[in-house]
Image (cartoon, rainbow, N blue to C red):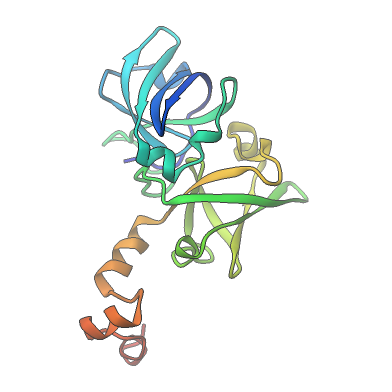
Length: 216
């Protein structure tokens, strides 16, 4: 479990993909403190297991599902990545609950400055947008952010200077691919209520009319 509060920027030293799986070695410093083999580190929001430790880097295996879901296949040696160790039980919960399981990718379509902040607009597939709500939480490349605006095809976030400095997001350009993880609480509510299709609404007995009648 992660919080989406990036601890440091790492750099990809090696990326070896054979077919749709492979290995990744990342140069880092802070996230190596106290890290052991088998620990989890989020790399641009992707939960990876440490399989080898060096003095200034760590290595992780990457499976095919991870490559399919994320923008990993477009990464190259030298790229900066957002890094976060798994949340400590006695640590502060500064962001939101992040599993490190990428739902899919989005595309940066606009960056616009407004005084001290920068608005970043991302287009995303319909299945992801179903779970994106204004003032809700979204994880972009491992960064916990608040959704500032929503449209039918995408959403916008407003980036303060500190976040821009400490993460990769403002280094991205229009057309760049980003990893997206929607709020896991919303996923469970959607699943339990069965409100994602008319067929499941009928089978569960819970419909939009039912929810409206009871004040939802």
